[in-house]
Image (cartoon, rainbow, N blue to C red; front, side, top):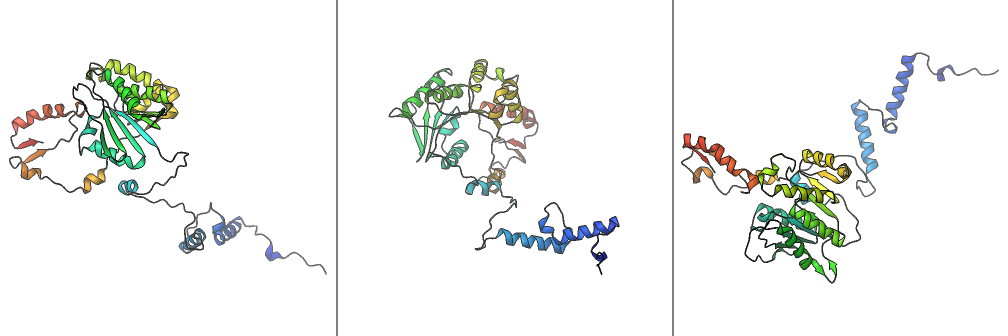
Length: 328
């Protein structure tokens, strides 16, 4: 006698029953279906345990994980780098052209940032374009691998030529050039000197645009800025990489030079707010200036672009009207 089909093994005809059985099977094999979200807490914990055991090696070490950890900026800067870069060179030497004279001031914030950067390179050579000086400024060695050179230029247009000469004289050894990467912290005099050095010795050049050169008032800030804009157009089109501090400036550069879009990045200035927050105050303004009930504190580098003059002029009427308000 032939046996008929096992009616108990036939799939149900009711759609709701079919879906219930299908869901049940998926929950039993949840670890095999990455696109299924299990809401049951017991099964979720079981799946988490199984994944943990899978990720652990025989010695208990984690082999792989997609978990994202949040760390503070201070920890990230002091920790080992997350990415390892393979290079044929054992070390990288950096040459920076800049007009930031604050680098020469002992203990200045700019100098501290430079010393922090020194841990990332074998050598850092900084040529400071200094205008209107009649004194001979000696080469300064800040640390074991950081050197400062300063031009002695009487005119603004000579700074680029003098910086170019210093680079050739100080960093050329046995027919070779010492620096591997060249950075210009402005696209003007620094950028021009950096470009010709990079071109002469076939080195990559990165140009920083730290101020808005597309501001209509830029030409009025200095009598030489009209010429600096011509220099900037020459330098930017020949740079290997451009760094801006705002998307606004980057958009203008890419709009004017579309072929630079791939090589232009926005990297805002880093401010270590955690260090400022955790710093122990050394001066009590209330005790130093007890005659003031209210104090306005202005912090700047005392340069033209710091707008310190505007701050004084803006607060002058208030300070005259209220003698108990002080500006520091």
